[in-house]
Image 1 (cartoon, rainbow, N blue to C red):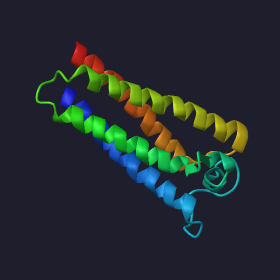
Image 2: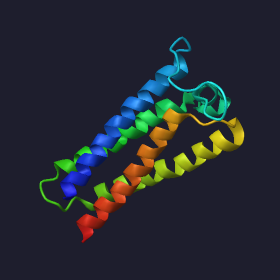
Image 3: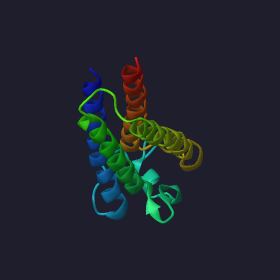
Image 4: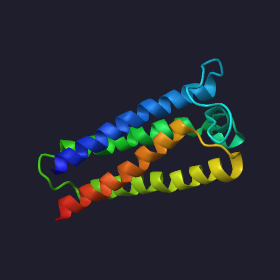
Length: 146
C-alpha cells in the first residue's frame, strides 16, 4: 500500500511539472492564448502578468516547476527503496519539502485574492496538487510508521 502512495506522489509531481510548465510558457509568451477566462474574478492573464507573479526575477510558475521536480525526485527515491522502511532523512526531506510547498500555496492564494483580486484556475489546480502532495506525504509517513 505504501508503494501505491509513493506512486501517487510521483504521478502528482509529474502532473504538476506539466501544468506549471504550461503556466511558465504563458508567463513568457504573451502570444499564447490563455485557456482561462480573461475577465472577472477568474482571470489567469491578470494573475500571471501581475507584479506578484515574479519572485527574485523568476516567474512563480517556474519556481513551481522546480518545486515539482524536487518533489518527483523525492517520491521516486522513496519508491526506489526496496523495503517499506525508507531512511529517516528521506522521510524528513519529503515532509519538509511538502510543508514548504503548502505554506507557499497559502501565500500565493492570499496574493491572488487580496492583492491581485483575481484567481487563476490553472494556478488553483497547481495549488491543489501541492496540498494533495502534502497530504499524501503525511499519509505515507503515517503508513510507514504504523
